[in-house]
Image 1 (tube, rainbow over the protein chains, first blue to last red):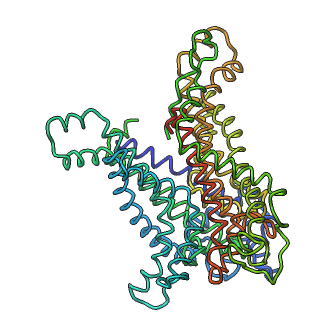
Image 2: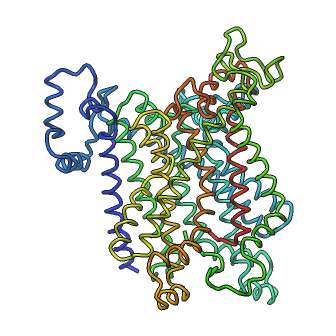
Image 3: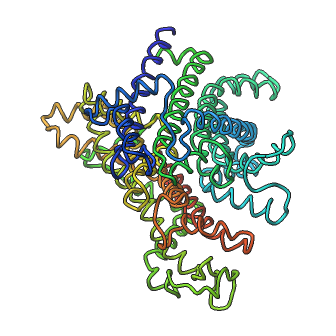
Length: 312
Length: 296
């Protein structure tokens, strides 16, 4: 098992390096001079020259990449063109807000999705099962940015119950919860659909195995059968939960844009509009690193729950 | 994602084949009302997008300031007008064209490129496989939404850039499925038999391999269409996709977003169109997968 853990850790390194190459390439994907992409338009000639030297723009691309990677490794993601602040600071603040949103929406989706998926599996073919299938299809089909707008229309414009935009200015738990409620709902839709579906099919797979029949035959209470099924379906469910949490963190861009939630997605959106490539790069690199590490953690956790996996 | 193919159909196994595979699939589809309804709905959506120039009652880009944000059911404007007084029905019809093109093209590109790369990696194996598959893994370091926005954000707005960035999102996914299906089929006995009977690589790939891997790949690609449509419209919604004044559902949703306080129903329409289209694609691909007995 430790060999597997080691191999899996080593495999994450090329993936991270590859991701960093893609992020590095973004400066060169951007139309126009790469210097223009990372410098404010009103920069003086001296500043431009200094940046050129610092980034090594006069050197060949592989060297530029290594210089850039070296800076990133030291936690230097460059300076924002718009605010001239260090990108690391902006990303750090935004990441905290995004993490909270990802956590709240994940918790909601996990609780509802697991419950609904299990109920559907144990009531296969009945009305509840059909309802769960409907939830699953709607969840994966609905454009979540549109769902966000609908939530604003209903709960902010029509009912005037909840604020439509931003995070709470005044301190306190209640204002905070009121602000995060709608983005949480909007962001929970996709994972709710995916999780309901996967949990249902994972539980059904277990339910159709012979040992469940044996458990029932020997007269085990259905409550105890349920425990057995959940235990056996757990590894598969765990993988999906981990992946979905990762998607929540990186996939909240559109929802954050709708609700002006001050997270990484909002920062990214702002950076795109101001053509602030260093911020764009910084956010994407940090989110990708998070995503890769999370996938790694899920894989390793899975081998703990189900040691058979390590043998593959 | 493990892919198991349907029963191998060996084209050379002539003789007693009472009911062909595809007839069985058609038979199952005909008995699946949800899929049939989704298919019909989709046909309607595609047809209305194709016929937009003839169906649309007004020029989608011609508006009148005096007619801004007319409600649904307004005289002469069945679905109301947008924030510039342009007819919503006409813009939704024309917008469907753009959204469908922006959503379907990347999946099509990914289907062709991804199949080629995946079959190559799976069939040749060895270093080629490692090289192709590890490169594809890199793209899995990003959630789909983030990758699309990252590339589009760097490239800048416009339909061609949207198509490029979304193709980059979907190619690696198809490659993975194509590779795993190829590896699986390649190990089956009838491929060995074909090789033993002297068939060359092109013949094996064309007649034996592709015939059996294309089904699962096609079904997988069809499951990606709804995501592609949501992402394509999402990019336009962020201002990264189709540029104004063109009509596109995501872009319409974006420009109408400010008007929800004046008129709540009209701004919801473009998103509803995205939702219905994406759901129809999802139901259709679910039905197709069940009918073809493919597990993805």
